[in-house]
Length: 263
Image 1 (tube, helix red, strand yellow):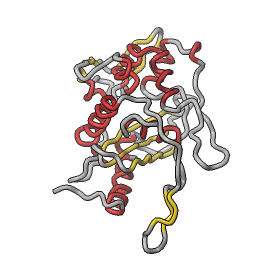
Image 2 (image 1 turned 90 degrees about the vertical axis):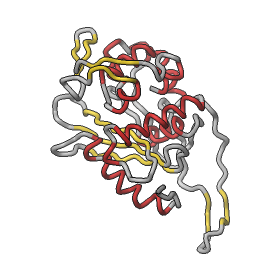
Image 3 (image 1 turned 120 degrees about the vertical axis):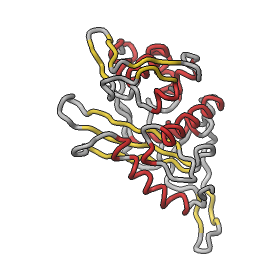
Image 4 (image 1 turned 135 degrees about the horizontal axis):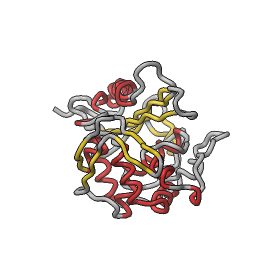
């Protein structure tokens, strides 16, 4: 969605229709809501995690547009975190991406990124568009909470327009306030987030990774967290099982960081 907004492939007035599936070449790729979401705005498509809408968004953006922003968001390179043995993503070569691959990539399937790459990319999307190199420490403090050493990091590059970042924050806040991420909502707190349910290969084995990524406050993000549940049993949708875990984390973390609930 970030790539589509940046490339002008969609805007806030874009609308989509979901009949419950989309035909791509010889494939019938279904939506999680098999009866369809019907007519939707761009924000509603995101709130609903609608596969057909995102397949259309990906088609409008194109392979080159998608890959341009995968590169800008760091999904083709190691994040640079100060830990040994960091893995890299597994992506299709651009020349091998046909309509089916583009369609499935548009809603987050058929490629692999590490949690650190994922969280760094989302930080860039919501922080005003600046790249993030994750580190284990920000500063060293003593028992009186006075800073002894501030750890310096390289200056961040702006790769996403601030206006795009603001739109993404607003729509991701709506996911929690009104959409599929409602189980992460905390009264009086502005939280943004996104559910995810990814099927493992080979398909049809009933193995999934369910996840939720959330940030707060939504209008000025200070903390961003991802919850990943590997091969859940029974219910496997991220909005159902991962979002409540995120809520519990935020209920502890936000007061610790001094992010107060608003009356």
